[in-house]
Length: 207
Image (spheres, rainbow, N blue to C red):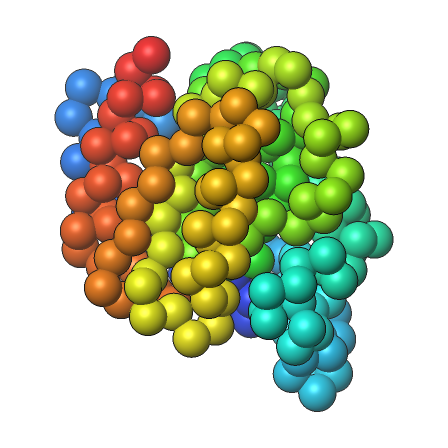
């Protein structure tokens, strides 16, 4: 499971969550928590922090088309390289889950939906679909049927619910089967969500 953090956090952010997941019956599983590179982030007045791509206020006002395409694709290649590293260790792509929160979830969707080999699944939390306009041309047939889990807080003040729900609706219209959950929370993770993540991971990692 390659799990990507949100803007300004680092790879340690979701490490504690693993111990809260019920993975009963799942084969031995490696969790990889990469660090995003450090870069100046426009929405935070150019302050340098860990970010998978640059982000502006317009990106989070329902117009994800403004996303930093070069940065998004650079991070996509970083995650592709991590998948290849696992494959060289003997883990086939079909046993790899891409997961992420917020910006990390955007990169999980960007990478997973375009990855040319079948993945075990894609999990995107409190996020949206970057570069949505190019997805119909770039989507990989291998992952048209990949299990997709998306979850969002109803009261999210950072990535509005409509952005996550809009991504889910678009993916459904393209034929993807999205398992969608929403919770009475803000831009965070809650206990009920962690239970649902565990349930979903048990399904896809046992398959």
